[in-house]
Image 1 (cartoon, rainbow, N blue to C red):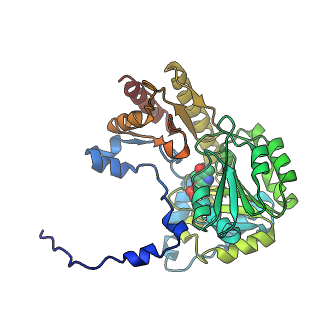
Image 2: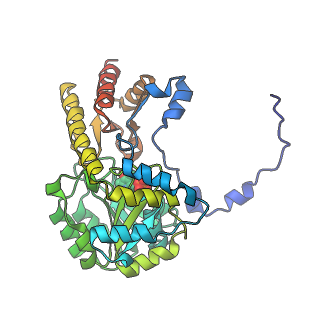
Image 3: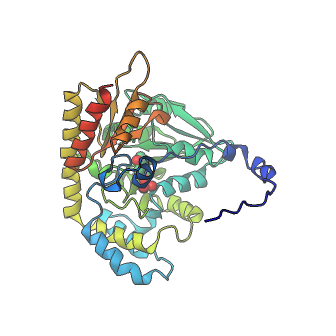
Length: 382
Ligand SMILES: *Cc1c(COP(=O)(O)O)cnc(C)c1O
């Protein structure tokens, strides 16, 4: 094949330099390495690669969701109608339909909250080591991020309350948090909500809610009618196994929902995602299997860490961050990550979360967890 060189054109530098400085200052989100990319990079067979890097459900998607996707295929020429999924969520959770907002993943909802409440001259408050989308959503609106020091890797809600400034319009709380897996008990979150100014939107990001032990689960849905400034976000990406379809939802006061809907793209959730989510909501056996697999896999991983003499942050999600011991005072997490890649195992470096000595690993199938533990032991030998 002959490759034609494109004629030299002047670069539109002027245009890019005139983008708002807060846009130019964004550093793009770093996703987990895709299996296909590692296969290309190292010439490995995709089937021999284990990806435990993005907190995906190792069981795949629910068979009911899969059947619903197939049944929805003929409708793809039509624009989507969100009504049925909104109604299904409202019915299942016992909330008004006016309180439900759908997102293209719950990431989309975090962006919508930022679009609705943040702007240059305003700020959001969130914890050190919190989910990476909070600073990104804040920055893309030209608002300032107030990052509050964590306590034992978890959110320090008293310090977060004290950090709220007159220009603060949003507080992001991840419970459990990613990548730390730390969990705030019900009483602490209630205390925060009771004391936070009603003029500040409090986002309670519950992306891992379905993985919580039943005794730790609070009725946060009921809190929405009690705290008009509360926005609870959940997702179909994690326990529901639909990460590739992009669908999540927010629960909030109808007036807040109305604002979010004004900044929402009209057709932000596609037909297949809507159909799959409706079916997934009803697939209790699949959710139970996902929960049990995660519980057993978490024990398998942490037992393995204990055998290797490694410390980890106790996690309430479907992932766990393990501490890689330093060598000669230097972090070895990057080198261990690279060694794991060469062995066909993808985990997630979290240096970008100010955790340079940790690697985050998603709970996989039993054989995947075992592959990872064997590779980790090998990686630590050097
Ligand atoms: C994965 C994740 C999300 C959102 O994922 P979506 O796929 O966009 O729904 C939100 N918050 C946290 C803490 C997460 O880990």
